[in-house]
Image (cartoon, rainbow, N blue to C red; front, side, top):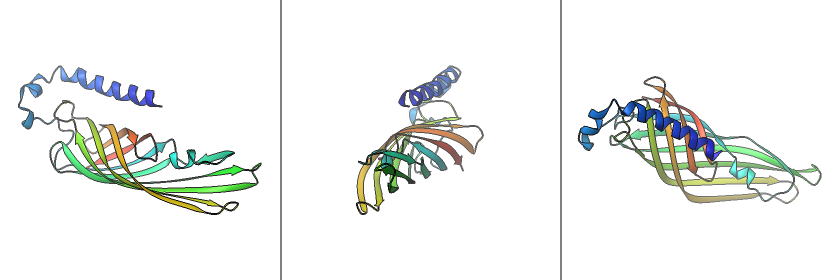
Amino acid sequence: MKKVVFLVLAGMLSAGALQAQSGKAFYNSPYKSRNSGSYSKSTGILSFGLGFPNKPVGYWNGYGSHSSLPVLYAKYEHGIMDEVGIGGELGITGGSYKYNGNAEKAKITAFHMAVMGYYHFNKLIPVKQLDVYAGAGLALRNRAVSNAGFGDDTATEVNVAVKVGARYYFTDSFGAYLETGYDNMSDVNLGVSFRF
């Protein structure tokens, strides 16, 4: 899966490099005044996506077969500088394990929220439709296991979330994104973004 993410990001960057040949004026302008137009301090971005694999269910220390839903994400970001934004994200997922010959079942649910800071490479990549970014922040994850055979278990933990990603805008206000990194919920997530 990570190879697929790498290939998609490499393809997006290659397309940007081809357009960059016609944008020499972009690189000749002072760094502070550059902006490809993909992001600015007045930008607001609302995104909805799905994350894979489901870490809260996939990494449960149970035995037997399991089923899980993808992680559902909702994210918002607002620009505070032409290349810097702050935002937050929510994630929720669930699944179950069957064991003892499928006679017993454990249900797992997980909720995640994070406060993030982002850096956008709009001063380095002169492609208006392509928004490449990196982000980091603090995340809180709550995972609950409901198990009739052994009792219930709930754990809440705080961790650092680190992500890199890219959005491609098909119109001025609508695009698709692909993101990878660590948030203790999934390794890769993808979805749609609305820019306003």
